[in-house]
Amino acid sequence: VYQDNIVPDRQAYMIAVGAVAGFLALFHYWCSVFKPALLETVLFNVSDSPVSMRRAMAIFLVPWVAAGAIVGTFGVTGGGIFVAPATTANGYFSIWLLLVACLAHLGSEAEAAVENARAVANADALSSSMFAFLFASVIVLGSLLQ
Image (cartoon, rainbow, N blue to C red):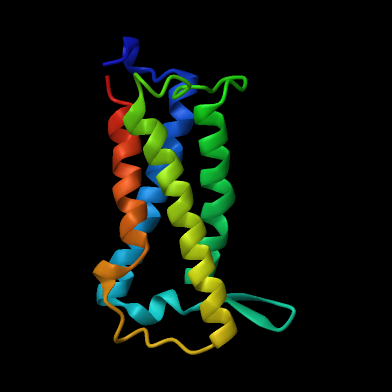
């Protein structure tokens, strides 16, 4: 428990990174199971190319988690919470695993855009790359608990 229930600034950002990624993973999973068409909702068009909710989440998560990985593992101002992997191994490795999962998800979205054919109704929600996001996000949040 933190003094006066105030989270230190250097941990607050990492909590936000894990919480946002975890929420989006749960939302993606829920949509995959119960409302697959919701993920295919076109939010806007860029150069006559539709950007669906699934693609927008993939594009958003890469810079969001990359910034979290940089702030969390390097000694930048207000960061560096995972600078000693020997003592903070769970958070250190999970934030980088989360970034790899985000990049893999973005890559699969890019392939899907090129192929332009996706069977959403037949997709197995448990094999979704968002399950890796959820797993890594929970570890990031758990490693911040004292």
